[in-house]
Length: 260
Image (cartoon, rainbow, N blue to C red; front, top):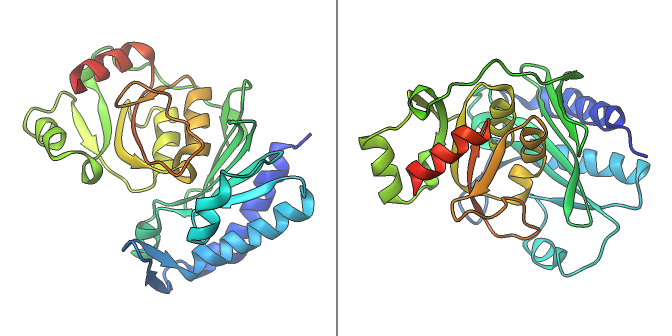
């Protein structure tokens, strides 16, 4: 049985030895799709992959920074399970020395995320969840303060860049919430929702490596989520997901009604 503490130690060690020494001294390149990648992305991926294979050779490895051919063929194969890694979630923030980025790691077995970990090295906050066992931050079960009752009282985490123009204009012209933020790391967004640092969430394009760990942490803390079409967010594919999240069911119903 895998102990979450063992995974936490691996991620923190790699963060301390590989990731953070590169912070504020970043080598940046552009990928084919125009998104940024740094040498730290590759180095963190390689080091975590090596350590996971040494300890858990039965599991395969899936990451944002795999080659296009590896990504496209991954779900055509059968695995006992696989690690889903985003070595730096929030690479643009990291490259710009904005202190909001994370390492996101999930274990997926038989089509469901069974373990998730998101580590924020700037704040030294480690969010973890094991399916059915609740979510923690730095080893303590997450307990949120009382949530607002109405949407108009909520702090929203909304990424406008990836929303449809129509929906973005609707939210900007007649915001249904009290205030809005956009931070730049999907994995941390889910964890901050879990903590009650935001009350509702909206993002128009998340990949599996972005949300796998953070979504489990949010759901294990009691948050509710779905896509804009009402489907479960989790999907084993390379398909981007439009996601809605809320810290409880009452607010989620209000949020969905507003967006529809």
